[in-house]
Length: 636
Image (cartoon, rainbow, N blue to C red):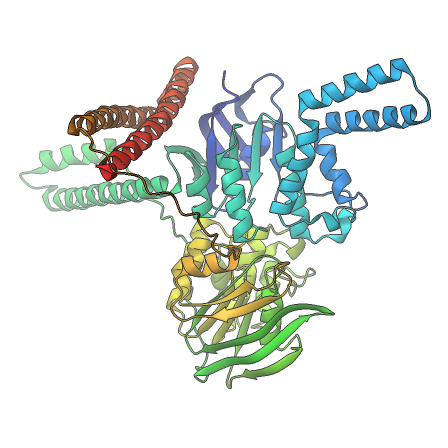
């Protein structure tokens, strides 16, 4: 049976449907990416799945005792609880056994007792069965992978930043028992190394999950199905985000052509009717009028890029924007970087890359004149008009509405001008009257961008500008930045964004074993991939390989090689047949009519699972045979 079955689901608020006629399932092997514009209903769907909301129509059928682990965007944790205490609470069963084991051990240290020995033995055996001792290593592995050293385990959760608390909550979820994992924007507070780790962790995981994300590289790595919400409807595409995006572009093109053909037919028919009514062809004109009245109109296709941003810059700056020579800097007594030699010139698009906590934001503060260097020379160019995007939006005034926030910048402009500008960033209707505290993360990011762009800077300094932005807004911002005539210096962990925008890289590169002191390097010929590897791959000297004893070559019978080739060919033919059948299943599962027969859905998903397993087996067999062939061929 499916873990979750959603049948003809709909929900409305104030008479307006947010979701309508939604049909889908979540299976035991599901790896789903849930996408859609901010406000499209993704979180609403998740709340319906968890039975937190009652649908207006349809139903959500959940398997008995289905335990869902859910990562919210802004989790609320007990500020006084220690990090380790909170993490250990993910497995209360193991923690209780551990407490019992320690208690029994303590009692036995004071007196010998056969019954206590027996209880201790039973408890230890039970802990082995539950993997309790391996669980301690798993805790250390997950926490260290998410940036938490053992030295901070005793700290209270309230001492950590909001982003760190989200990572703590993610660690808790990954360690707790569940049947379905739901992650809402899990990559927002992770650096690239952590994102890669999470990709591998999920890929090797056996439990099903649903991930809400706007990170297309992440979605490509971890998903096998894309559930997309658009205009209250849910569409299902088998494959990763790239598969979905390609299929969506083809579908949009087909919709546009169908719409244009129909509009052309309607225009030509109306012309014929107007020209021939009251003439000898009146009957034909009347017949065409009836035809138009019965015509089922094709809706105009909705563009995936509703936003069109244009970044106008003020008068250009000088050619030399920033120059740092032999600079060292840090926070307090903690040194973050030394011997920094970097330059920024007009129209550079510079990506600042490095792990969380290495000093990227501190470097931006130095460029903004808000942080002093420890030593060295720092030069700031002339005629700079700086626009700074703070990932925390700290400069937004919580007492103002969306409209007041922008109107304060241009008090002489009419209301219509302000509303028109805000509409470019998705704020329409009642949205403009919202106060800052009630805005979602995505809405705050859009408002902050609207203010920043309005100021017409010639230098943009951006700290995680794509956090909380949905894919349409992300693409609109990227396109606007690519066309921007000024200089851009930005921090980002979005690999697609970095590769699409940057033409230069400042990389925080570890030069000490403990990784605390970092050296910023700027190499003009670095590619985005090389810059990322330089920042996130630990340095290691190549190990000397032992010389292998030379072996005498032996003659190989060509028949042996021929037989291996035949085996490989048979396997590859089977592989092609399996892939073809998998594509047929994907097509069936993307059709909403399939979900009217739950037994058929289960059957198709099971067949897909067996095919995926067989494809893995075939790959292993082919790789083994190819290796055997090469070894024999080289010996011949």
